[in-house]
Image (cartoon, rainbow over all chains, first blue to last red; front, side, top):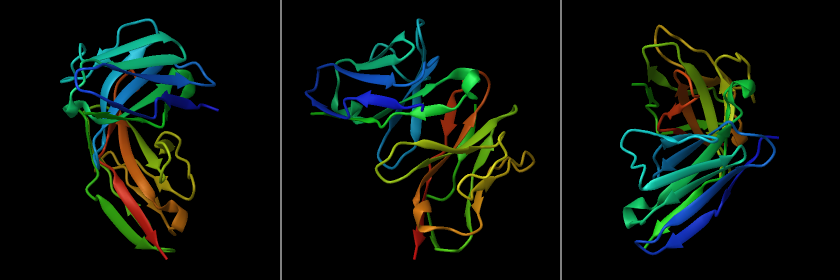
Length: 117
Length: 109
């Protein structure tokens, strides 16, 4: 159990458009979901922490108006990259946690490759 | 602020040789330390955590608070151990993870 999916796996868009990425916990309820960004051959950088029904908490340096996060249910969180530009091209990874009941372990999605032309 | 350092980007060993992937951290409180692994074309997954004090796939890691280290060890490397390994730290509430830059382990025959 504890499977996390992401959709789409890969997206190419034009500069100035918005892109939505979905993260779903398929077989458990996720009290918290996390969004990461990973540049080539670099580590995962936490962008924001999202709790169901409340506003996301963004890490320092992450523009909340640029990266809109919605956590509408215990199984779904979405990341919308608004007015995307080429520098937003990256690998975006989400993870989901069962919270303290699950020992705090994070279960990761497969990632979404965003390319902005 | 917390920080995780993995000094080696690439570690190459022969099959059957011992493996040690280094991880050092900086955090003023009591951290939780994890090792995550990413096999080729697969997603990131938890390998082990320090509070469990268990051996997974022959790997162990001991938290050394004096040296602020959490090195990952395995006595005899196997070909299937080839992967990217990330050390991560969770500090405080919320289960946020701070990742190191990762070490690519390559086990050669």
